[in-house]
Amino acid sequence: MTEAPLVYLVAGEASGDVLGARLIAALRAMRPDLRFAGVGGERMAEQGLESLFPMRELALMGLLEVLPNLRRLARRLDETVADIATRRPAVLVTIDAPSFALRVAARVRPTGVPVVHYVAPQVWAWKPWRVKKIARQVDRILALLPFEAPFFEKAGIPVSFAGHPVLESGADRGDAARFRARHGIGAEERVVLVMPGSRRTEVTRLLPIFGEALRRTEEHLPGLRPVVPLAGPVEEAVRAGTASWSPAPILVRDVAEKYDAFAAARESGGVGLIKSGTSSLEVSLAGVPMAVGYRVNPVTAEIVRRIIKVRFASIVNLLADAEVIPEYIQENCTPEKLSAELVRLLTEPAARARQEEGFARLLQQLRPGPGLLPSEAAARVVLAEIGARAPSSLPPPAESEPSLPAAGD
Image 1 (cartoon, helix red, strand yellow):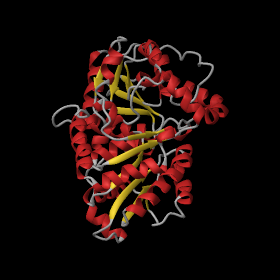
Image 2 (cartoon, rainbow, N blue to C red):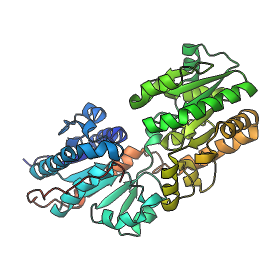
Image 3 (spheres, one colour):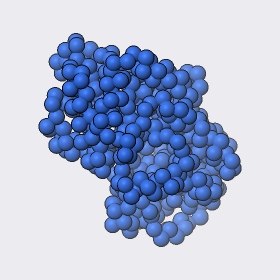
């Protein structure tokens, strides 16, 4: 009897692990006979995937973290390619983490195994010359954002828009009453979400600025209750950085409780003070008006300004091609300016309404189709690749590339 098709997935970080787990669940719902193998984390393990090695070994950010681990990363690359050669999957799905995943893809694709890369590399923002190399590495890209398709299609890469996974996060389904009751928040108090990022460098730079902005805002408008969701890698830094805040912030670890806090902020007429990035999309889905701030090392900022190709830092603004959310970047990211914006959002209904209307319009752009979840749209594309062609026999793994640069390359 013919063995069921094998889907091989490679994820390299927590967000990719979530995407991979949802994709496996959607694929299994459509094709219960499918088998799965590859590299993943806890969420993919919950779906039955036995990871070839611990995914945390790949979750490295920044040059200083990656350099000491180059030899081990190269060995893991060889192991992954060799495992694919042995298993002969019907399709390879690489998920984000381009420094590792696209190297795997480049070595597997010449064998005839269809390669789908899930999450378009953001070369459109600052490395457009990389797109020709990507065209040699993958057969298809699953894009999260609608404007990404034309960019890659110009280079001859087939692209399918799968929709953004934030739509499956539950960020818009929190329980405000439960959160207020759990933390004793009075009816007159307004919740302020504070999200300074999930990397130590972000927290170190942004948390003092955000904290001072909140203090100034509280002087103008008493009765604010700050809430800071904790990201695992920076939990201790956030606890230390907020220890002297007054009023003391509510620190939440659980994802469901974080979304309850989102609902409490929306229903109390509160606001968000958010690091630019995907977190702004989560808060938008919850319907909470916000100010976005970000600051990096001045030298890094100068380099980025020379090479960046987009007008905005927030995905919401990129989608709108307009400043739906006010952005305070680099030298503009000051307590004075952020506080003034928070006061405006807390006191001017028209300013809140403009953001809320923008959220409703823009989030529709992130949906892959009527009644279709992003994971289901992605699963349909993967199944189509399985059906389109059968992989040829795989030759022995190629020699490993000499080096692996920093994650996110």
